[in-house]
Each structure stands twice: as C-alpha cells, then as structure tokens.
Image 1: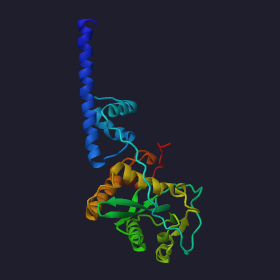
Image 2: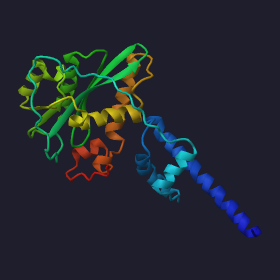
Image 3: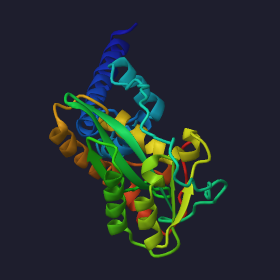
Image 4: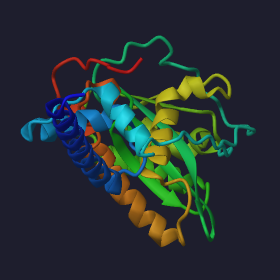
Length: 269
C-alpha cells in the first residue's frame, strides 16, 4: 500500500467513526424519551438531521452501526391474563371482521394491559382509534374494576372530534360486557363489537398498541410505586401520540394521522 493510499484509508476511517458517533448521539437522544424504539423508525426520525450535516447512510447501515455498538433493542415476550371472560353478561358479535377501516373514529378498540410496580400490579385501560392508532383515552389503576374502563372511555369521548357513526370493539372481558359500560356506549349511539373467542388477532390493533408502549417506552415494569407509573405513562402516551412515527400510518404520528384527509399508506408488512 502506498503512503497516499494509507493516509486516505486512515482519513476515511476517522470520518466514518466521527459520523457513527453523531448517529449514535442522535439515537441516544431519542432513546432517552422512547427507550426501546425500533431502528426503522429511528432511521426515519434522524435522517433529516444527518442530511443537514452532510451525512448519508442507508437503513441497513444504521442497523449495522447499532448492532456494532450494541444499541439494537432485543424483543421481550411477556404475558399476563387481564381478560375475565367467564361471566353471564351478553357477548356482542364481531362487527369489524373484514370491515374496511378508512377514517378516524370509525372504529375504536379497547383493551387492558398490566404494568408491574414494586407495590404490585397496575392495569392500564386503553381506548385507541383503529385508523390513526391515536390513544383516545386511558386510565391507570391498581384494579380491574369496571369504573376504571369507564373512565378511559369517558376520556376518549371527551377527545372525540368527529360525529359520524362509530363502532367500539373489544374482547369479551367482564369490563366491556358489563351493563354500565354498555349503557354508556348506547347513550352515545356507538355500535358494539366484540371478539368471538379469546383470540388476540381479533383485537390485533389494541394488542399492538399495548406492545408498542411496553417494548418502546419501557412501561411494563420497574416502577417504584403507582404514582411514578402514572407520571411515566402519561408522558409516554403524549410522546406516542404526538412524536412517534407509525409504520401503518405512512410514518405520520397518530395525532397527524387522525387529522389528515389523505389515505394512509402502510409501510408495515
């Protein structure tokens, strides 16, 4: 190797290390807010800032950089049953199967997921818009009482922006079949839909949002107490709705997708 080639190689190597440090710094800044956000969304979020500094990298290169520096996020698989489906309340049929969801507030999906704290389990009751993936209402409590699910629904109703027909879809849990919950839906002329059996794929959007909050915002465990969990989850849902790009919304945030008049193009397979 000639002297000129040696110094050119050394210069390229130093430039590559410098660029990788900038990439990792931008990734860490986002991860401070969303500790486990995936690489595809990171690439979309940091690409404009890199281009401003004259740095061009592809998505595969970003994967390689994060892998080399141990910044890839491993998947976690945990499961806790929160559905109490053994009850005598009426179970409604599935009205959204094969339904083409093409507008915000056409379908809301509801679910409950558990949160682990040092004081025991807490339960996050969620109501999410199926089209925009925006979380419309939520309630974090230390119980699975019907009132907690009703409070989440009341928040969603308060945040409702459109008055066209709406379907509420959920599993067949006691909370969603209880007459108090059903009466509230009926009073707002909301149609009711439920899964036909205990199959997470029949309420896949709600399950997916649960997974995003736990995997990317790290809300599943590690809280000292309930108050700390409440504060963290409030901030996480705010970031999720207004800051995190969504693959199934064409990289719009849920808030942006909820207000757009253009068809959403999914980049998720």
